[in-house]
Amino acid sequence: MNIFSITTEKVRSRYFSLLYLFLWLYGMDDIFAQRQDETRKMLTMDMVHHNPGEAQTDSRFLDPAFLKATGYDAKVFFLFEAAQFGIDWQDFDGEIFPHGGPARKWVEQKNDTLQLKYSAAKQAGLKVYCMLDMLVFPKKLVEKNREGMCNGDGKIDISLPFTQQCIRSLIGQMFQRYPQLDGLVIRTGETYLQDAPYHTGGSPLVHGYGDHVALINILREEVCQNRDKDLFYRTWDFGKFHALPKYYLEVTEQVEPHPRLYFSIKHTIVDFWRSAITDSSMDYSGFDAYWLDEASRHGVPFNPCIGIGRHQQVIEVQAQREYEGKAAHANYIADGVINGFEELKTAGIRPYSLDQVKDNPLIRGVWTWSRGGGWRGPYAANEFWPELNAHVVTQWARDPDRSEEEVFRDFALSRGLPEAEIPLFRRLCLMSAQGVMRGHYSMMGGVYVNWTRDDNISGLHLLRPYFDSIIARNTAQAYLDEKTEALEIWKEIERLSEKLHFPDGETSRFVRLSSTYGRMKFQLFDAAWKVMLNAYAGEKTGKIDLAKLRENLEYYDRTLSEWTAFADGNPTVASAYLTSYPYGREDIGIGKTIDYFRKKLE
Image 1 (cartoon, rainbow, N blue to C red):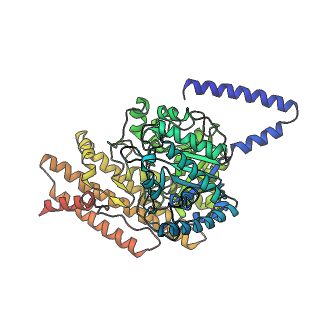
Image 2: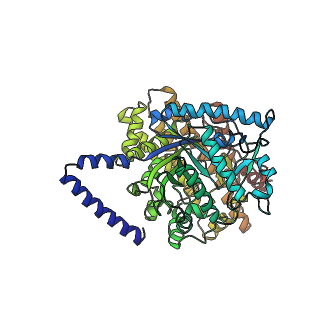
Image 3: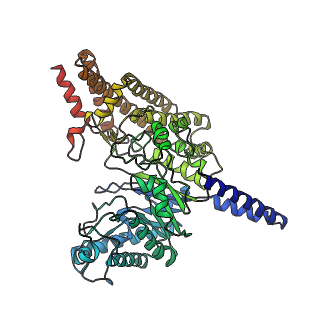
């Protein structure tokens, strides 16, 4: 915390102390205490992030009644459920979606769907928000007005008056057609158009970060001032605005605060990872050396933009982590998010958790992504694990004075777990976070965070430079031992799962089966690393131990066969991972690396 924020905190503390004394003298301390309790409760929001281009996720979290009963205040409708796709632009230009055409029919069908979904959420007592990409407009609108909307490179340009006119019209049309809307969530870092055949768009950043300022100020005026609605502006850009205080403040200091305006920030300094920042595509130039050299050596730091500046913030938490199995097995991240992950506690750099910033008056809400994020699978058929994470984070946010462990215990009891078994269940969950860190990443850092993500496992194509560094430091065996340690943790998780007895037999069965799934997955990771790192190190010296290679390949083949058969034979667990990378990049999958080293035995 900088000197300015410390000084501000002291002034604030002294002010409230004097105010409380005044109210006590006049017998109003009970009213003041009640008001404090009300303001400590954070806004709680949830969103199901559907895979773009695929069928929508089947989830209880899509049910407004379930969300309300779970303790949520608001539902965020995902991108392709955004109001911008249900408006026909008829009053602006009747030629954009002409009557009788396929585009107009698509818009009308989308409108019918959105009206039903928004109304159901509203009737359940939830606030209704929709997340939309900006800048996204109808293709016909952009084609007709290219000179007035686009720069010389063909990109939609927010600095142009006609583009700004279109943004204002878009806001007005959405709130007019959907009075159910309580506000908007704005995304600018990525643009998904897979399920929007009649729209086009891209990032508003054409000239630099001033474009953020221009867009925010337009939205602030149209949404917050003119219509008294909530605006959540996401900072996500996988780089500077999201993660670097210098750029966050550069943008937000040019926007006047408003009680309806919030900035939405992931709790991590980059994406929802835990491993060290070792991605060569990252621009480190703006990072403070303290963060880069110390914190990132141990793990992805808590986002330093949280709690700074002048604006209210909501914190984004992914309950079904896309880089860590997507809830196909236990991965209890709620403890780490609230209390701090073990690798950040080791680093000792504060703040490293939500609990340490809960008293900051700028922190006004928590937004969980209960399901989704990323691409493809694995596809978990049971929502038990993401529901656990979402429940604990949300209920804690509703009463931040309670401990995470208290809320965890409430969840276990609500699912009927015998009280005597709660310590076993908690041990399983806490161990899952340890096993994920060591299996997917490394407590030592120096591993490419995306060597496995979604349901894909890569090989040497992505890991080679990291293996080079590991071998050069003579730490190959330490990394192999860590993968074996992760496997041993998952074996213990599997044993613990057999001792849990939920009254719902299906839940007990799923906890056991998903724990076995996790053990098999991390066993395959252990086997894959034993093949890759041992053989690659030997290849660099020209002395591959062929006997060891044969043994490791047999271990890998046996594990892959058992895991695939297990997943195929138990539809209640998730699909197994892919050894052949999709998206036309089969060459980088683990299967190619295994085949490469298998030929060494010929």
